[in-house]
Amino acid sequence: MEAGYAFRGIPADVDEAMDPHLAPPELTCANALLKAQHVAEMHPEALVLGADTLVYVDDEPLGKPADREEAVRMVSRLAGRTHQVCTGVALVGRVRGIEETFHVITEVTFRPLTEEAVRDYLTKIDPLDKAGGYAAQEHGNLVIAQVEGSWTNVVGLPMEATAERLRAHGF
Image 1 (cartoon, rainbow, N blue to C red):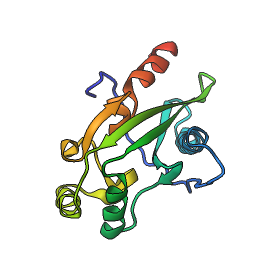
Image 2 (cartoon, rainbow, N blue to C red; image 1 turned 60 degrees about the vertical axis):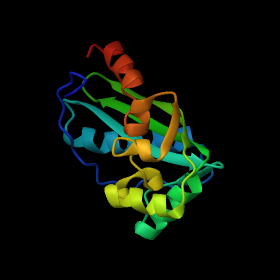
Image 3 (cartoon, rainbow, N blue to C red; image 1 turned 90 degrees about the vertical axis):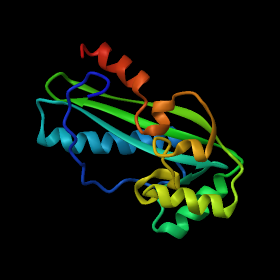
C-alpha cells in the first residue's frame, strides 16, 4: 500500500525451479511466472504479480538457508564482497491477455564482518526466509556497505521497474 497500490498477498504453492544451468534472470523470471500463473488460475479476473529473488555470488545462487548455521556461512561468504541480487517479476492478467516477465539486478557490497558480527546480526533478523540469509530492510546497515541500483529490489520487489510496467498496462 505504501506505493499506492491496493493488493492482496496470496501465497503460490508451487515447486520452484533451481536449475543451475539457467542464468539468474531466466531462473528468477521462470519462477515468478510459475507463481503468477498458479495464482491467476484461481483469480482470472485479477492482474497477478509474481516475484522471485535470488542472491548470486561467484555466479552461484544462494537461496534461503535451511538453518541458522547455513545462514552464518552464507552471510560470512558475502562479507567484504560484492554480490548480485536478481529479482524476476511476472505480470499475468488472464482477462486482459497480459503475460510478461522482466528482471532487475542490483549490486550489493557487504561490509567486512567478523564471525561474531555475523552471528550478532543474525540474532536481529529471521534469516531462514531470506535469499542469501540477510534482510536489507532489517538492520541492513549492519552488513551492507553499498547498493548500486534499485534498493527496493534488494528489499524484495523492484518497485521502480514494477510501477513502470503497471503504468504501461493502465494501473
